[in-house]
Image (cartoon, rainbow, N blue to C red; front, side, top):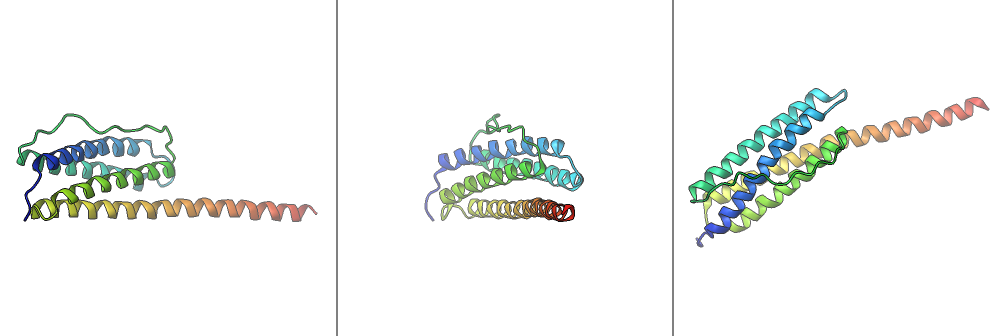
Length: 166
């Protein structure tokens, strides 16, 4: 096994903590902003994501302090778009998950062949982030399909109305 670059690992774990804590805020915000007929299951999903982000931050923090690091009190920047349609929220969530995936892959690159435990931690987090991405894509697919169906129905109704007037 190669030597672990502890400083680089600590820095990445600190970034992960900050990012996951920002996820707690982000997903809590989204859970409060969801409206519409599918509000209840989406709110439950967002609250679950917030809880999971907190758990991930705590796990990263435990590893960070175990390696002799000191966790920051900062969180990663959170952009507020002021767009709160379900589709916008899901798209922003997917972008957040993709950024998390990138950071965990960076961690994997740093710890690979250097620490079995850290490598397994990074791999399990990558797997979870990939599953979140799949779930969000499925949710978005339903919204996109519904919007396309509505547009098609409106076009069909408009054509029928034009024929009826003749």
